[in-house]
Length: 89
Length: 192
Image 1 (cartoon, each protein chain N blue to C red):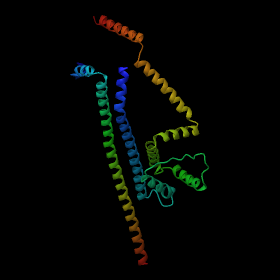
Image 2 (cartoon, one colour):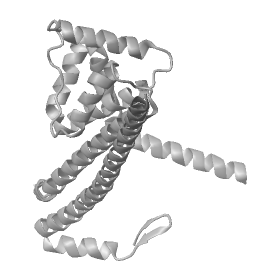
Image 3 (cartoon, rainbow over the protein chains, first blue to last red):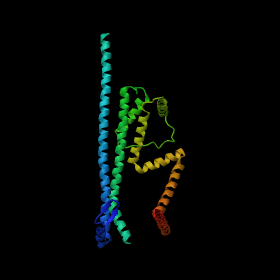
Image 4 (tube, rainbow over the protein chains, first blue to last red):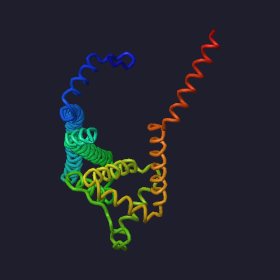
């Protein structure tokens, strides 16, 4: 049994011997599958992160639109006040 | 022969996954850069609402328009024609912008910095290979290529040192073992 401090990997030796019995091709395939699964998992995590970031960007765009609307409202208010003053005069 | 066979199979099996991971990483960096660009544009909008940036300023008439155009762009380009003489209009705009940035409490200085870094990050993630050449080109123009060469040399030294530590010679490992034994024995003597 292989041990790394607290971690005990049971069945590790059996797994290796079983692989070695069948030769290098199945062993290579199994290790390759394990490593590729690791990298595909990493890729899926990155994709999830990207989706979150894209949502944040969308929120920023909505915020921009609201700020712009506020700015236009302010301008309209000023214009209305100016027109009222002009009409009074 | 067997080890080579196994390693070839493993490499063949994992190369698509590594490519997929690197691609997703690059796309995430691009998304981050685009988010930062959107953030800086929002900040500019806020400054305009507050009245810190006004009509007639270069930051309002030129910079903000450019930033907003970049926000909705899909591709990012950099200026390779640095040695070319700029037009009078461009020089005038640059001078005005410099004047605005030199003022105390410039409201959009940090914002502009964030935007430019995000833009370059987007360019790097969009065109990873061309960006390396651009960095080298700029280093040659700035006469700072020596730093790149120094970094290359240092990294080579670091790799050699790492290799030396990881794959020690048999003689050395025997020496380490002997020294370990010596220390353990001396410890036991001291404890007793």
